[in-house]
Image 1: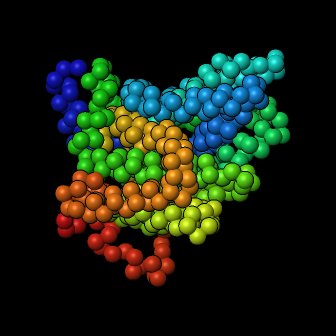
Image 2: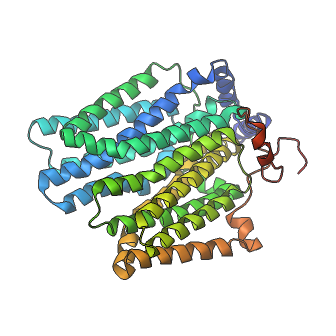
Image 3: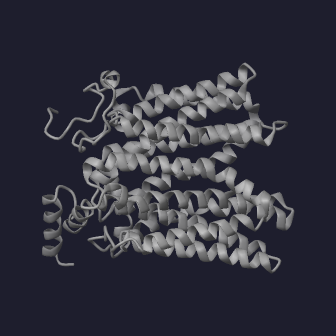
Length: 459
């Protein structure tokens, strides 16, 4: 691409207020379609994708255990599902920035259907082999990563800025509802018959493919085509220029590690408990996520959302540690997970809002890929850390150590030089979201120092 052409694109991007002209025209066209119709496929597709990932996340390890009678094989199947988080988010963002997100979603859903169908056919023939199972699990994990990146890149072209906050909150709620239902559904379907979850997911992926295949033209096509290794690292460079997103990665990575280590401490110390009780406690995080998403629908984003996020985690880990000392760990762990679910949903909506409003659509998928690599990659290290802490200090000692570590980090973050870098405020020029009318009793919550001011307000 010539220098003059690149300069023209940059000027066009700036004149469009941060949105490339092609994407701006696609967005304007999309605005002619009511929001319930225009982005309904995204919400439905997101729910299907999450349900599929969660049910298969249970079904693949169980099938490996059934086929081999080896707990190690079940562990390898679970690992195969999660390893793409570490491997595919950055190159996946590079790929999505080169191709229409809708086309990526179509290819992904077709690939997931073929992967599940291959396992289904192998089961009918007495298989699958462990190698086949691990490859199918890895394919599911990798394709799910691509789906989440494509969804993030597609949404900005479909929703006008004032409605973006509401759209993101609804997307977050759909994801939490699906996560809440997915794991128990996977276990139930496998109990009905080991072939059943694969049949159900074949149907779900077929429906999702048909949904996007019949849904209009490609929107949100990437305006600039990355062409080399330098472009692969563009997501990292963009994040260095956006303090809020840089701080959010540090905060969410650390807090994800803390809460998932806490979950592993609880699971490792759950010997003698009923599986139903353990499942109910672990589902509390999804309940909190739904509640936090609902709050995001009716309340504007809090400017100091990252600081709030940190202190919610302090409250949650104090609850969990206290519960182990009074002999009621399950109840207090459940309340702790509800709290982190609420805080996580609030911060997720705010972070995604900054991503879609402040990042060039041509690099959005790469930025999202870097962000998700770090925050979700923490999951991979939580299991061994939690197991080590229980071995070292049992459930009570492990919970206490996590609590003290979280309190220490939160207190250090109050020191101004660290606070400015770790928990920066939301950008002041985000579009004011269109929110449902609230009761007058909530008017007191709309404090000017806590809310994002409208464009043109005093700064």
